[in-house]
Amino acid sequence: MADYDAAISLWQRTEGVGLSQADEAQNIRHFLLHNPGMSFVAEDGGEVVGAVLCGTDGRRGFLHHLAVDASRRRSGIGRGLVDRCLDALAAHGMRKCHIFVMSDNLEGKRFWQRLGWEERTTLVVMSHDVGPAASP
Image 1 (cartoon, rainbow, N blue to C red):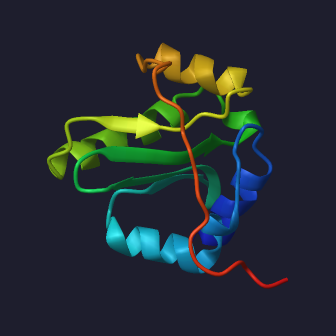
Image 2 (image 1 turned 180 degrees about the vertical axis):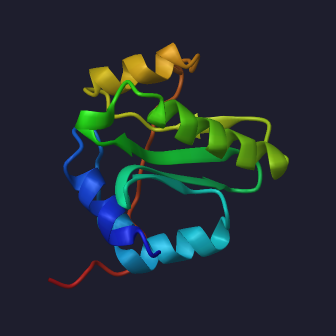
Image 3 (image 1 turned 90 degrees about the horizontal axis):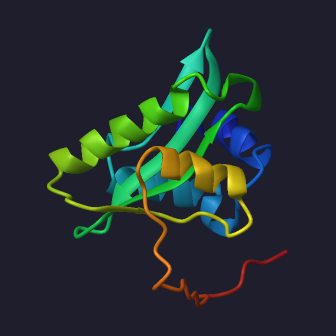
């Protein structure tokens, strides 16, 4: 949580990252507590230049919001963050990991394909709000 403000700032300025109420501080805190030692930031000179959320539902791993500052891309930071996450998931017994990529995020799709990830065209993500709506 010490890096939350820097990470949320990075995610907000990164094209292809979709944020919602689920990314508010209390929700990220809960996610991190539920998945200790699985999410990472990359720093350069004390500045957060990359961030990723990683966790498990007990059956599968999931990566969320992988982002690298635009000026630092193609330097191995993204690949390094992914590798750390996959190692953490493997250490927790996970054998498969999923990601969600916005359908119009062509740069993101190319990144994941370069790393060997495959697009699943047989699945559709469906969502439903749970609980009271957030107050304005």
